[in-house]
Length: 294
Image (cartoon, rainbow, N blue to C red):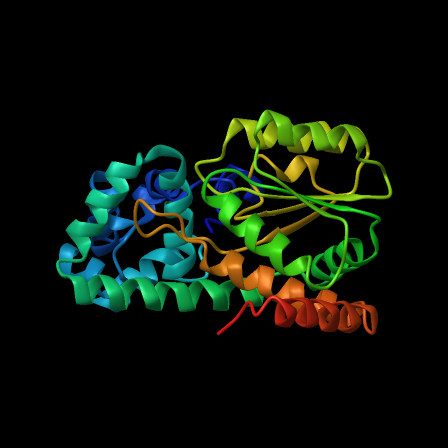
């Protein structure tokens, strides 16, 4: 950070990467100014570049790109890249996301490798940053509430459905809602002894925020699984679980949230022993009687 600045440190810390580049331009070296100019002029494309590819585009060394990010006050290139992606999450249409992916990855094998590596990094980042106390609070609420209400729309509904399906194997009274009017009627009976969980990713749906606010205003314990502290769901959360959901293309990156859900399911199963194991045994017997699996 600029310790000689007339602005307070909290002001500088609040700046996004594009504003930081503009803010620090007078103090940057010639090489860093070159990198900054490239990002300002091509930030949509720059967001998806590795530090190595960024160095090639700018005609500088990779170490210069990394030093540039630290000169802006970031811990490294990956932190700056994540904040650039936060800007894009709110501005890019789905078609623009797909176009950028095909520009930065020229063939199917490159796309496969890059997406899978980014998924691995997203899970690692989520594991390192997920607040353990929040996770434990979510486990306790989902384990001991009278009823569990799960809510999600569009791609988030797939995650909610997976959570609800497997949660029903180890506990009862699980209600899955996907936003249809007749399903929202279930919320008319929700009480403070229940728990409500919602999942939402960029681009955030207004309807999801409204439903979460509705539940929160009735003082129902509310868990939200989302991507960042700037998510519109955060103000209405009793407990928030943040998953590092970086964008790679037009499709949402659901891998870190699916991993978080899997961790929740296993922790709930352990927390509710022996009841969870007994319920699983009953379900196994039921599936066997119907000859459900090959």
